[in-house]
Image (cartoon, helix red, strand yellow):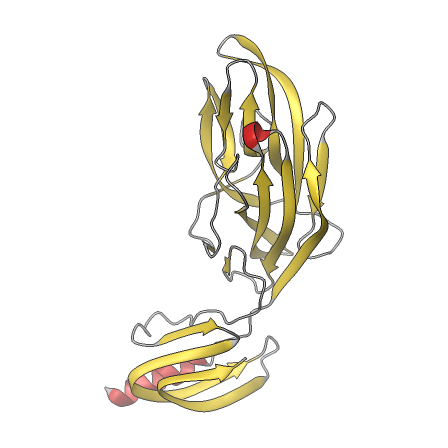
Length: 254
């Protein structure tokens, strides 16, 4: 049994690859103010000149619960197959799609529920913060809640990638600020909200419950308990970067 455990450890950890987080800081921060003429900012995660989403502020007149009202706010238009971690909420008797607020360190991956701006809504797009003027209704936890993140799922070619965008929405959705964004360039790999540094993706073999591997402070840490094995690290091209014996607790520089 011990030899079998060591074999699984050696093979599975060899599946590690260096993660590649691509980070973009928006300089200067872009402030969007709702008006009948939309104010917008394009987000192009991978820099291929084909944006994945548009963050915009807007006002529009509509009818809610038999009242003629003006809705203003900050929202997202998703392009192509891009989706946002979001949910359907209500304003009066009308549905509105609202992005989930994510704290720093929240794991963005395929386990969350995603929606696109094509989802039917009284306010166009996936709302970050939306206000109805006359009946004083609001939707969106981004409103007056400081700097927060929303999670994004998009495609590069046929591969799914995950990313985050950091924003702030003022009181009553009177304006929105876009700060920065990042994405995980390794397909189908998770990213933590606010993470801007490269690290290591998780071991893919679920049989290794007894082995703990994580990245922190620019080091990879391996905890194997009483067992030992071989840690093999490859880059994205499959080239072996490191092979070393592991046992107990070790830390290696990235």
